[in-house]
Image (cartoon, rainbow, N blue to C red; front, top):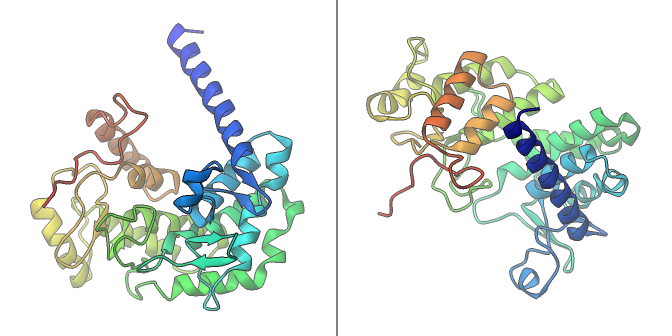
Length: 295
């Protein structure tokens, strides 16, 4: 094995070992806490069970090969289910000490997305869990809540700013990260109009190709980006009426590949553009290709 490849394998093995160690340290009776227990974590509210964190960790735990983590993978998801809002929304986080759910300032759309995705993937990995059957009513309400946020022509989710994992970012309207998850969720649950979601996402977030949308409102939304955007091999991070995100959203673009939103040709261009921007230089990965300037 080449030396560089061996070094990469060793690094991945160490990352895996440290990840398992961290998950075990953060595991509580109610699920994975957002930070390791301690005074600082408690003071900042990070001993809570966060929706997206718990769901992403649940997937990792189910795949970890570690017996205790595999057994506890669904625990945080069940805690979140107990605090689901009457309208179906999954909270941003649950403060287990106070038994209190928090839904953030302008909502938190991705907690519900990740929760549903994690349930589907955990059942796929181990059908004996029967999570989808046990939580069928809650799943129906969560999907219905998301469908209420869906634009009825584009079949993409709409959201307020600062209402996903990038909760201090001014992304709003149609957001790439959120809609990559929405497309994946539609595929996992066989929801209607998945093809429309895919097509409209590629028209709105990648408006630079020759294939222009027929719908005039879609063409208008694309107009501003086509005339001003710089990172044309990447998906836009969000599209609103007269403004858009051209900072080069690393996570959103990688997630679009993993979720199947990007076809193979566009996936290649995305990876090439991210490598050209040196997003993995010095750190594992930068959040954006171009820093967002202060105004």
